[in-house]
Image 1 (cartoon, rainbow, N blue to C red):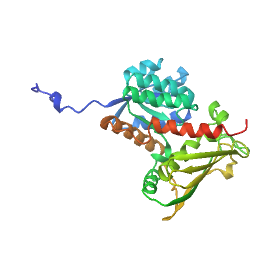
Image 2: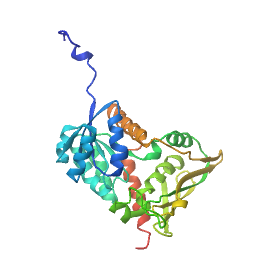
Image 3: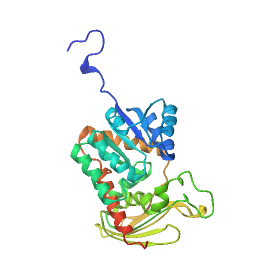
Image 4: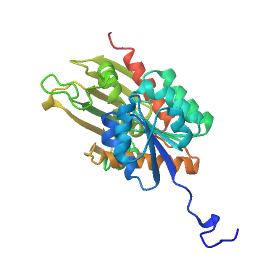
Length: 309
């Protein structure tokens, strides 16, 4: 077509994807909203929350629309970004996929295998891209380290620990303590996905899992992998303040390698959004998609079933 003084339709850059945020808690305020506002390739369109007053306050801070209905947000947006408890997230993600929205999910995607598979099935059935924000798979230099180790072979064993002081016995609870699902499900479900998200791409799919309880909410996992390697993971949200920390070490024929520290979590969230947009553009599913998230839920549910009530 011919230009009439402005740029022709064919020369105009494509419209930026509109992203809507669901959730208003500390994670949404500290990570999701700042990252979406700073992302150069998308438009932060609006916020929905279960408490309208909290959603309105956060929306005002970023100059975006507050939504009273999540389906209205889905209708207006290309991507739905979730910062909700897992069992609230899962059914809403199914609805977002049906509305044609790409899914930027939080971990765990759900705490039941049925719900997690429903999200993955919905994304595939409706042809929408999905990515789950697993911090270690997007934060640098940790993400690059995982990719480097995944290229190695000859693994023998690995050990991981993620000991959070969200509910410490000897100090004030963290900002994330006001979270009923975390208090009910503990470290297995909150930080277990982080450990598994590194162990699986490096050592291979989990072929067996054994779980045991320790003090507080500690859960110890013993895993076997398709590579033949064995790994362990110690997980908790109730560690003493001085004992809190994160570490992961892998050992094999090529040596001993330790997970580096990482920073800039909002930046990592921006890279997760980039990965989602790339999957949508290319049609190639991201390795950290809803199907991978469903597999994490399957492993965690299998572990939980072995624990005494």
